[in-house]
Image (cartoon, rainbow, N blue to C red; front, side):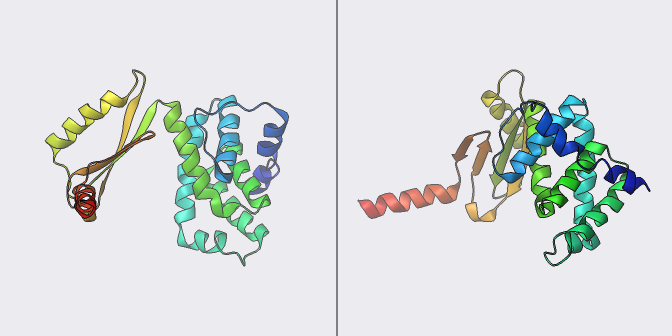
Length: 207
């Protein structure tokens, strides 16, 4: 019954986007997933439930990772209506807001359920920007100790504006041999041992 009641609101998400002016997202995410995420951000912003929708998308993400659900949603041979019902049943139990529920219905109606995870990722990027977070990925060959990590965070703050904060992710990649690769915002710095060796090798060949 709950799924049916929410299903009756399935097109509120898409029609509200069409009828009303979009609230500008803090960043532009390109691609189909970006368009859906932008519309979702706008709808959630107007109802002042941006954080709530972000949390609900976490529940949707967990639902997608359920093998039983993913085997249905990601299967191109399963009927669209059955995929939609699978999601509806799962979300009805979670009692998500109409906006989140409507997003899933619009994706289902348009045959786009397979990009749900991409839409969630895009919305997450918008929310990070909304909070003034700057995504930073640091790749090293070996794990950084606490002191090195603390020094790195201090150095990275030099790239930020006063209202911004770092959202740091560390990765391990033994193939870079040593040093590190830093990606922060639109900046990319490769200080890996591997790249230094490649540059040196190229220089030797050219001399």
